[in-house]
Length: 132
Image 1 (cartoon, one colour):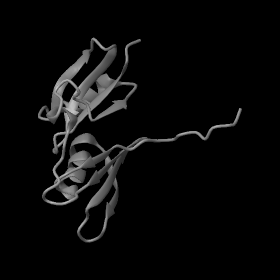
Image 2 (image 1 turned 45 degrees about the vertical axis):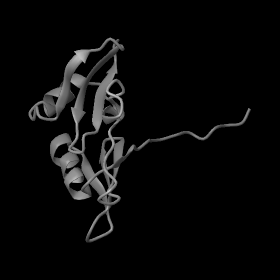
Image 3 (image 1 turned 120 degrees about the horizontal axis):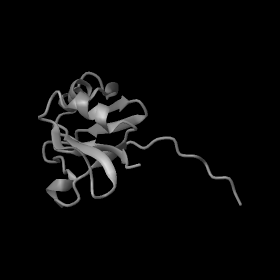
Image 4 (image 1 turned 135 degrees about the vertical axis):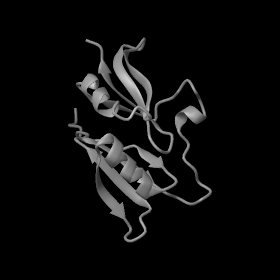
């Protein structure tokens, strides 16, 4: 049996209308750090990170718009699931701006303690953990 290389991190890739506005949203509303913003001076690509979670943001052109999952299939809402050990504390942090919360913190029928937030491009981020 061969030894497999370990995976360290995944970063979803979101197409956005405006990279600067989106990067600032993640920084100002969700507590991420902007770690990459290129090219300079007119960025079209960014990476935002918080702890071990990263999200890539890319502006393509005026005709290429964001396509969050829920705009295609309401029942398949999430664009990314982000595991957190303490969804209650994170919900309290994000709930200071209730405009971003799209589903409140609850124990879901899927067996999660979770809530949903929506970014400025319409992408749905689910933050949670499995129920114990």
